[in-house]
Image (cartoon, rainbow, N blue to C red; front, side, top):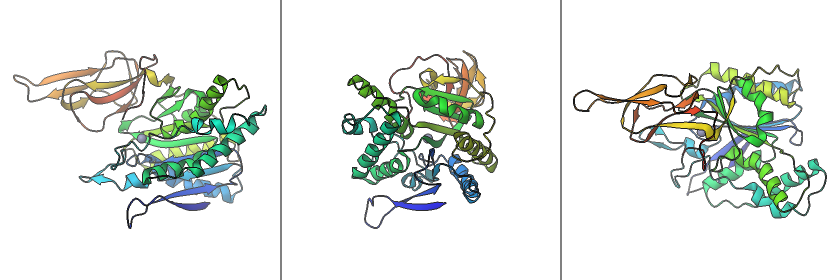
Length: 378
Ligand SMILES: [Zn+2]
């Protein structure tokens, strides 16, 4: 296993952060799988999975079972990890720009369209290699102006040519769930069932340019733009990328991490990255639903939140999810029930127990699309 330190751009005199990656297998071998954890720096279940995955990958390497190439970045956001305020971790937004660490990734399809459009041919595999080379050149030429840009560039340099990308996050309190683009869902389904996902949220393009969609979106967006330009050469969807939400922020335990690591190792065998008997894929543990059908429950009033259900529960329309209570109301306390507007699994809920007016309570994976525009939260 090769450990590499990648220095980020120094933002200030005497200050330098470093990203660390691990690799097993021949860097030119296929399939290539890229995994990273804690891009939102306070989301730590994936970091513990990385801790368990390292010896599993080392063992596979020692035993000659690595056929493809695996890149693992256990702590994908050294900038956010060091950000604290009032004794609390603050790893979702960069203090300097207020930008979400998992948004604003570049449009790689737009970046390479002009470079590749006249050089594509009838061979799909050759076209994939051509596009990957053009993306690598574009990333190499990108001169980051800030520490945050240098982090984004470094993560993409490690991940851009992977066949499968798993970005391990978590929610506040949550059941295991996964986000992916529709174009790359089929090859990810076995992973979802091995992990036992309670919700799968699919979007054509969720908006906001998160890390995973930049990598899978490259292929379908480029294919679409080439078609629009009258270029008919084949360009397969050469990357399947997912944001895997490993439950809630408090679900950092060896028990969960061992189970999730086993699921990922099984998936690596399924993909043929690791040699060994193909694992049995369990039956679907949920229904894949459109992200546009996911309801974000909000409370119109402020108060203390008492949940009536738990993440992972399946709800019907009108079911009370939580009561928001104002114990200062005249007469008796005001109790405002927050009810499910759609039927489905409550896959995430807030971690705090006080909500302000208009504040979020949780999210339900409904089956019928009703939202448009940007589909991700802040
Ligand atoms: Zn996250």
